[in-house]
Image (cartoon, rainbow, N blue to C red):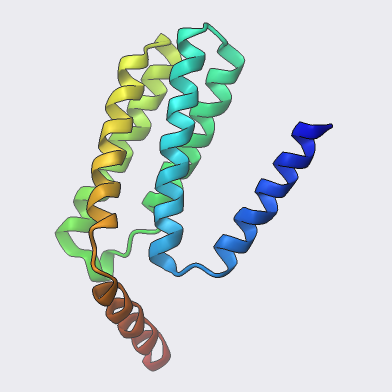
Length: 142
């Protein structure tokens, strides 16, 4: 009963955070969610909890696929193409982790996501704001 209430509260808190978030913050949340799921998946592999492993890897894969789907090839150029390939590679490695029950693949993907997230987190607020305004202006003109 208590766990259900906590989960409902967390779900509502997340909805509130998302409602007030800009694109950068949503991507930060997605990356944090993927990292969290990868930690859970690693623990599940270590404990040989196959059902939990599958659930967490599946959710991490869905998040990474969402990140891949957020890429804007019109604006990002080569960086976007490289990120697309990297996200695709991560998804492939998670398939390998699922098939082989190998936490090493989880660690590899987790490290890659952490690296991307740290670069994303380092984008100055002023640059984020300018980019958001430019995107809004481009959308209203086009």
